[in-house]
Image 1 (spheres, rainbow, N blue to C red):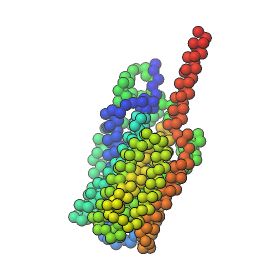
Image 2 (spheres, helix red, strand yellow):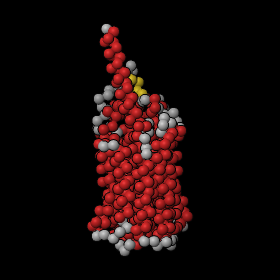
Image 3 (cartoon, rainbow, N blue to C red):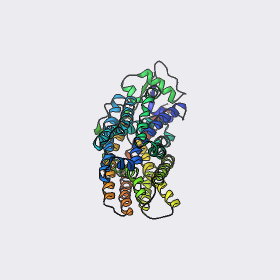
Image 4 (cartoon, rainbow, N blue to C red):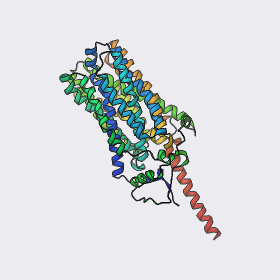
Length: 460
């Protein structure tokens, strides 16, 4: 009888077509998610004019989805460890697609907010699930690169929203870009057919034959045999993934620091995604030019997320992440000052790279920090708590805009969380991460094997 550690099998595998398939679906889902998230900020000036709402009301309308995202990240992220990730992902896609489209049918700000709240449940819930899924299946050598590459789909979704917004809103009204958000539900049958289930979940449910087939696709050199016993390390077994495990084995303080860093990063991300168009329009740019800044912001986010993932696979991911928070604080502060438009585009791109890109690298780091069995739960709680910053951002910046403060002060308010987030990341105890402890166990096992071999040789 052979014992096969599927965790180790996935770690040591070389990237192949199976990994490409998982990357494709997870990235596509995140593109849909990013579109749904960005579409309100893109259409906000038109919505405010059409529905006759002031900046403070608009801030609450934007934040309604973020309230939903907080609950979705915590409950749907945790639920995935109980019912399986595929069904949790499908549930989330249905929620954010159908109810974003439904928001376009409303004329009342309260009904709009209610529709966006339900959509937010799906937007928030899908993120921890796809990050955990990609982290689980990605080979260790390229894990951060694949996770951040996948999550760059978030910025692609933002770019898609801006491109469609420039063409559709003026011709067909703001509702048209919301109706377009309903399309992903058509792909659900293909997702259920193509996306593999989580390996620890299959093991916990006794679905061993299905797990063997997936293991053979993860690492084609593995040929399943009748007597094979597939396992995961004890710390990666699913036992309901209790929340208290986030604070076990010395992880408690680092868990709080992850929550703080997510709160600060998401504040910056949603402040910019919700109000950049309006702030730039207020600074004298036309709607078309203001939407161009959103395109540049998201293009920078793609470079930041992929580049950050590449750096994280080659240097210490914690140091890379802290540096990205510092860059966010500096670049956002500079946005409030007058400068040539070409230079302003560069600064906006840096802001995108160091806010949206930073969040994506933070997701990758969190996925690596927690053991496999509580990965969705850990990331779900971090995103859920972090949504507090996302919820506050549109409201706080909306209040500042209504006070007609100088542009610099609005951007300073968005930049300060970058410095706080950097400090929180620096305080995370990397020695408690699952990747470090897994490596330590391998070293101890190797030393034990070598010691046993030496003892056997001595006795012989």
